[in-house]
Image 1 (tube, rainbow, N blue to C red):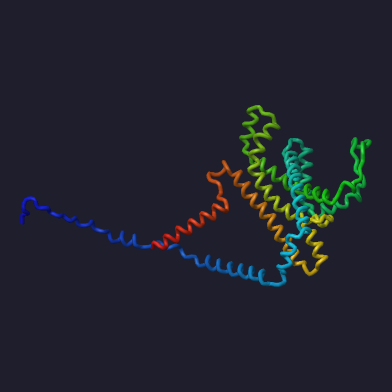
Image 2 (image 1 turned 45 degrees about the vertical axis):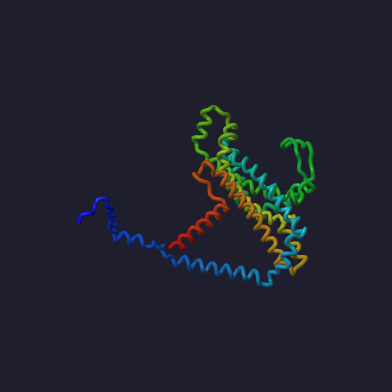
Length: 327
């Protein structure tokens, strides 16, 4: 049948055929692999953690009211200040001593290498408490110290017992011990610098001292600084041993107060524990940002900070919730 002139003809195109297998796959949902072992382990850890926290909160033996009383007492804070002073002095002197020992170990002089190796070997072998007690009784071996010509006359002498106060003994003992470990950290950092850097500096005719200060050591700091900051965590805890040379640091103050107030021994130990946790956590934060700073140029992207990790986790969680709601 023909249409009259001027009539409009409506043509409806048939939809293209749908591939049944493709439609079925599109409708399917990809499910993650089930890991029951991980969920069981997570549940066990959470239960144990909850029991531990519950025990801390409800056990009257911890005496949290006494903990709050002692935590910010002036006596405890004075001991904390001494701990910080000893740590700061020992860290600086130990690092300086470690640099000198590392340079001596890398020297071409066999005498310097032997002396440096012997020092590192001896101080890493002797317990720190033995070093401190030996220095504390040093005046029994040498009552006076003299400065003058070797094997000759002395220009002036002084009484060792007056010079070696409790603070001086603690700082010297920790510094001597710290220098032995810092020497290996510094030596490892210097050896980590590519040999081509040494050769390029030598080819330019630069003096040895200038090569070390401006080329080798700045690159070695990328390895030295994070490792030595990590070493500071051990130094903070090692300061608790200065109590045995009659210096009342944080641990010494807690011990002294515990002897005076026997009923508060546990809360006093908790006070020391919490303060040491705060100090080591602060050093750990510094370590993270120091490592992140020196990672520039060595990695394509810097490691995220804890705040960045938190934001990323929240963003991922929101996106996951939206996907679940859309399905």
